[in-house]
Length: 144
Image 1 (cartoon, one colour):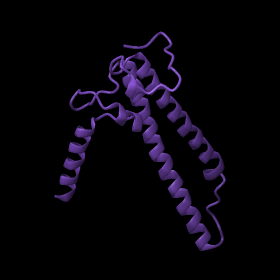
Image 2: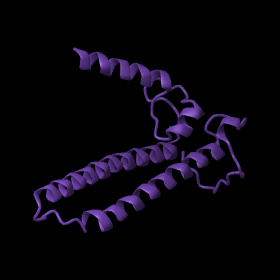
Image 3: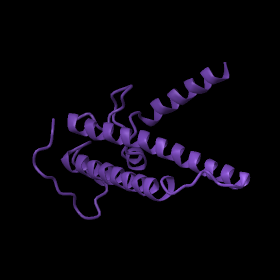
Image 4: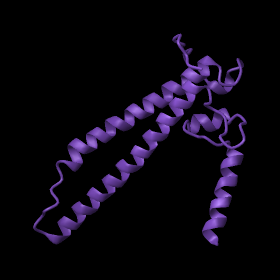
């Protein structure tokens, strides 16, 4: 199910107050726009970091402390970019699930994910209950 007609979002739209049914066209467009804006912001930040920070960083400094500090900063930027790359991948997956008509439903249970959770974390793929179960299971495995 893909949207072919452009859906407009009313000013000051709040999906939590929408009474037209879960993941109706306006609600889907609201989350689609939110995800696209987030991805655009991340890509812009990434481009800025590459141009300003990583390309301009001189790691071969004569002073050992300065070199260590520069290398640490460089490594931190690379880890941040890697986390953002993974986040962009999740955003792309969420956008794909909107196109497939699957957005907003828990991958584990098939139940709707709360609108409040999706507003806070639009890339969520699990309901709060399923996420908590998943995290408890992870802690149990880690403690063994």
